[in-house]
Image 1 (cartoon, rainbow, N blue to C red):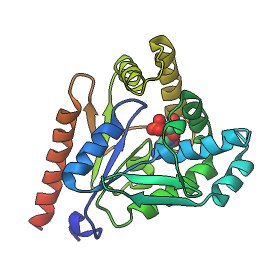
Image 2 (cartoon, rainbow, N blue to C red):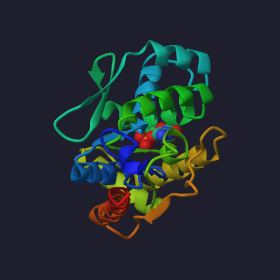
Image 3 (cartoon, rainbow, N blue to C red):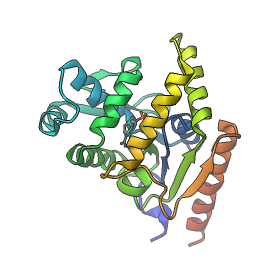
Length: 236
Ligand code: DC
């Protein structure tokens, strides 16, 4: 079967990479141009972490976190844009889950094997029909190892910290560059050294360094790859 025919709504574009590499921005823009859906899977880990922090749970207590994850009513709804909006118990989370505190907690609970299996199951269900750009840390290596396009989007830690500062300031929030750079370096280490589905480039993936290119240029590169796959499928 040709890759394009494998799923009902189109191909899967998996984008993995470290924190702040621009996966969300680039992924959303690519989805818009493809008229595909877009799912940022970090939101799911962040949503669970946010709720767990609210309840005062320990981020290493796998039983309690799993009980919570299973009790939550998760939903994914496509709105006017490409984004699949994640809501828990009917409540869409926005700014409250973007804090460094929630980011750190989400990286800690993402170490846990059962939490990862749970998230992976929901992500596979969300993408089963294709026509989706999905970004995270293990999409091409674990969630959709058969994704038609796998990108590892990278950038230097300094560039990623500067981008994160600009993003926070745009939202009217304070940004301390040395502290953010330190957070980024520690989170990279935690995400890539963990035992379960660590962040790494898949063998058959495409490495894209966005340090000195714009988001638009990164999107152009991704769309070039997509067109290649689609043309190949059309010729089969
Ligand atoms: O992309 P983000 O910063 O919103 O992700 C928050 C954390 O969630 C990240 O530090 C690691 C975890 N995560 C993961 O382990 N696997 C994914 N597919 C997505 C996120």
